Image 1 (cartoon, rainbow, N blue to C red):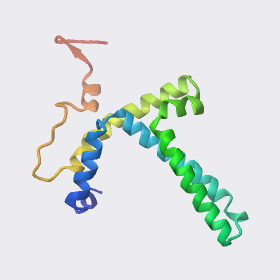
Image 2: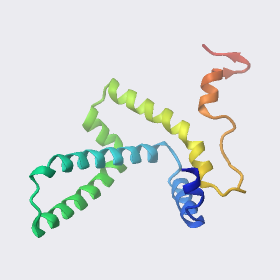
Image 3: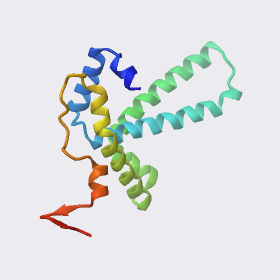
Length: 148
């Protein structure tokens, strides 16, 4: 993947990085993306399940295209307000908390590699000094003492 992104063109890499940074490059956008992918995958699974009963005709194909376009736009809206969608899907429970914690840890683990993939080879990386996995392995330290 590193090779694909490196040879994907300066403009594409720069655009993706600018969009990432302009949206804060943060957790909210990451979870919105995960929510959008989840909603699209569930729609794709539903389409695949109804495929055996699909009878191709011009009307059916146009109906399918319009329906998927509208559903995709609604998924963008739902993904942008993902806390509301998550509460609707999972409720306010330990499941939601566990999913949110897992998404946060995943975000912290992939943030630095995404920036490394999207930057130019001679460009310096402006990231926090210590990644999450190192601080978790080392333990949290405050004023020279280990907190347990």
